[in-house]
Amino acid sequence: MAKTAYIAIGSNLGDKLSNCLQAVGLIDRIAGCRVTARSDFFRTAPVGVTGHDWYVNGVIEISAEISAHQLLRVLLSIENDMGRVRVKKWDPRTIDLDILLFGKETMEEESLIIPHPLMHLRRFVLAPIAQIAPDLIHPVLNKTMKQLLEGLGEDDQSVIRINEGQKEK
Image (cartoon, rainbow, N blue to C red; front, side, top):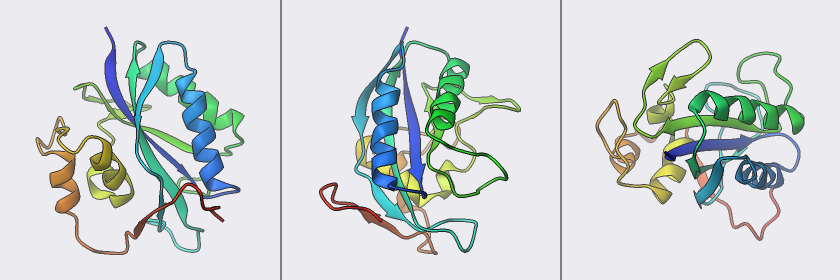
């Protein structure tokens, strides 16, 4: 039985918007998965690090007939194929693909935590997910994506919608 999953997509190296759009296309070709909705993309300030270029971020909704673990393996393969190199946490990356939610499942394992443990604190995740699923309820916090977004403070988390006709640096 298919589950609805949400995946965060981000890039801050190279042609960031193209990287994100390429990842959406690759995810849509995963056997047993189909992209069913996509947020706009947003230019976002780095969070938790200094000296990094701004990111491009968005969220997609998929229908998945594979497990969360299978999905994670394929997403990591896509990141690798697109040139992501993992040296240390939060380094700049050509592409970053994170499972935010997978149906109503919750799990906490070394390799996979669902829901994503920081999603409710990140405007660059909440703005796009609230755009495509404002009434979606976080399975642990029991708040909608819109409520979580509205509850964030106005700190350094700048999020600016990108007109996809414009070229992102």
